[in-house]
Length: 284
Image (cartoon, rainbow, N blue to C red; front, side):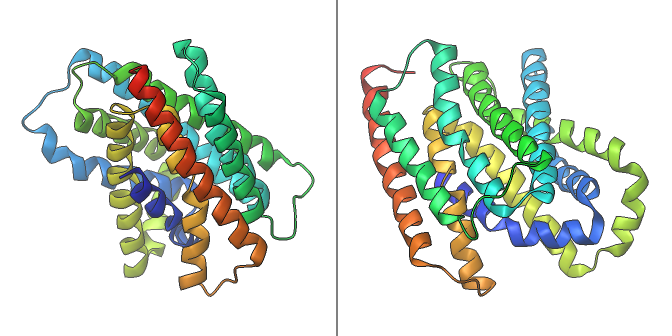
């Protein structure tokens, strides 16, 4: 399921790029979260969030919204190569942060496999090479740190507690919808007018696939495995983005890119086996 989320997120780049050009970053994020919240609303008819769920859902909604803002603006201000390398650091940051919080570290072999996966991402997105650091790079690094914190918090605050995954996911989307709508309010009318039927289909895909489905699966999986495992599997996102770009957009894949894909998949495969064996010995 986490690999399916990575595929969905990897497939979203072309759609998101088109939508942002037509309506702007904040307007697209606002509409995406509003549609997500509305789609999940029927599930709330028969269940009222508890006070604890409201607190946890609001906090996770803030961190999730922060990731998307930092990531979206960061990508627009730096090269795709720099952005891909920096966001992939989440694969290493998450197990490090989770270990510090829980005071229980994964074996060194896991970090080696994560480093192999990050190296694969570097080769995969190398292209013309890394560029000099920019403000966009700082935003992407901040996005990687906040994403690691979000995934770690998701596990720390919900594992072993009687919270409903759908309720928490809905609360996250509501928080994002409110925040982005307030900020993007002046630009929303022009964005809505600019969108054609194809844009609305793309927006539905981002809302239902990249938000509702992805957020539900991510939280559901983290509560049953670990933040480190989820981050490692979700770290395969660049692989799917490149493969979809090759298949749909006619982009070319070099021998170095193929080697990068092999390293990402090998590091992910071995890392999840190490994590699973460790979790069997020391349950989370």
